Image 1 (tube, helix red, strand yellow):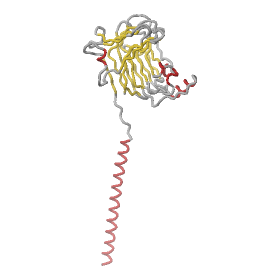
Image 2 (cartoon, rainbow, N blue to C red):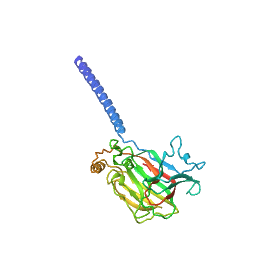
Image 3 (cartoon, rainbow, N blue to C red):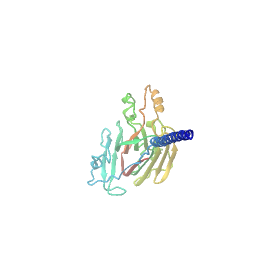
Image 4 (cartoon, rainbow, N blue to C red):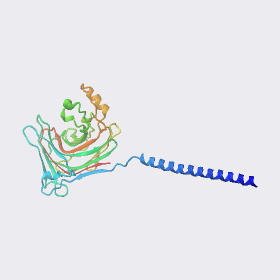
Amino acid sequence: MLKYNLTLSILKKRYLCMKRKLFKLFVLFIFAFISCDKEEKNTEEPIKQTFIFKDGFETENNQINELFTIDGERWTTIQQTNPTNATNKITISSSTFTEGKNAIRFLSNKSDSQLSKIDIEKNGLQIVEGDKVTITANFYIVGTDSIENLLLIDLECCSCWDPTVGDNYGAENQCPGIRLMMSGGNDYLSIERGKISGTTIQQTNFAFPRDQWVTVEWEMVMSTTNTGTNKLRINQTQVINQPGMNMPNAQVFKDAFIEEGINFSLQEPVSYERVQIGATANPTANNVELFVDDFSIKIE
């Protein structure tokens, strides 16, 4: 009987010991599962928020300075480069607009030895590879004179320029980017990529209407390679839909500058940080008057 009780006691101890071990294993398993779950959640890519900036150029007193607020919620600065013997102008219009009571008016005199520019600029953007960008605006271009090579919208990266190169390649090129430009002999709006060492994505099927409001929508998926997408619509008619590079490519820049005897290193990661709209450059043989209303840029 004593032997039986002893054996029973040993079995109970072994059973309790085994039970404790199983409980510990269970606790460790739960802990490992929770830790793994947390780790997986921590490694998930953060969802990028959509950025939208809109401006209809509305003011209280028809003053251009009302577009530049202390909180920086509206526009950042004006780019103005006058030709030698004339002064470009930027004003608020209360007579020509699409909605509300205002639009913005640009008068760009023809260039001489100085390239003529007058536009408004929004800084503080962060457009990187893979982003989908949609820029929309209404334009009213006065008159029927040739406007070939007139630039209307620039998307630029100034921070990606190699600071060791400085002005060696010309101050005009120190903010690489892509632009909307009139081409094709006169007024065929196209996508100009010369400042990123690319060719112009051109169309000659849809001439830009004059002396009337025209809606332009420029849509891109950003890429430093030919996997980028480039779409352009004028009055809801798609005039360009073509893949291609639309951001500066480090190797492309390096190769292009080597041909000029310059060792250039594109500053990465590349990010477009500003957009300009107006007569961002007027190398035409004529003065240009144009109005812009209902501008927006969406980054997603």
